[in-house]
Length: 244
Image (cartoon, rainbow, N blue to C red):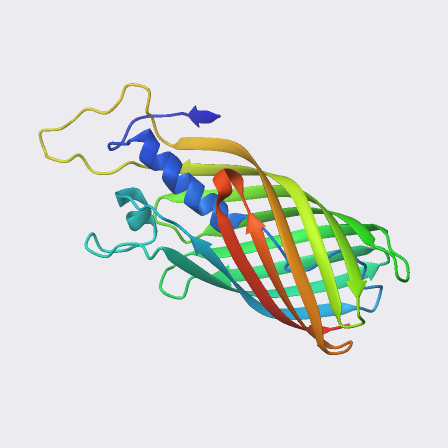
């Protein structure tokens, strides 16, 4: 669903805008890179990780928002380092916060989540539901926010390994404050139905699978995830965490 309001400024190909919104929606899809299971009242986790996003296409709007020169294409892969903290507040509730950035850009992402572990028991799967909110800032003329809801299932095996899967839905909202400059001083028109700020709201399903390995039980863990978003877009995530 697309929404447009206010007065026109600049040219806009809505197909290019949708591609740009799709790219930032993928960058903004939240994951704490963690499975189900409560950390308990005194439990916590501090993690340093990154996500790898694959983008086969690029356009002028994307280059502008990432502050790239016209001759500098967007890499097919964008890496987003992130710092995360998860804290148990009272069993079975956990809260979490992540901060991420692209080192070569002014893009920053902040996200938070609340997770309720519905069920967990010894040698039994853990089941949780998670709500999240994330926002991208630092872009020249656009803003992006995402609200996500996920169901998570985890199961531990062989003492050192825990696998988890999740499925959910996200609501993405992107707002573009202005379009591209006219191609020439004599070009003064744009599509009649495009006005600014121009915004799009989309709903997208996502699925992920992950594996955690306890390197130094129970304090140091490494986790890897593969996330599949709408239209088959893939995101790889990894994290090294310390806590209990």
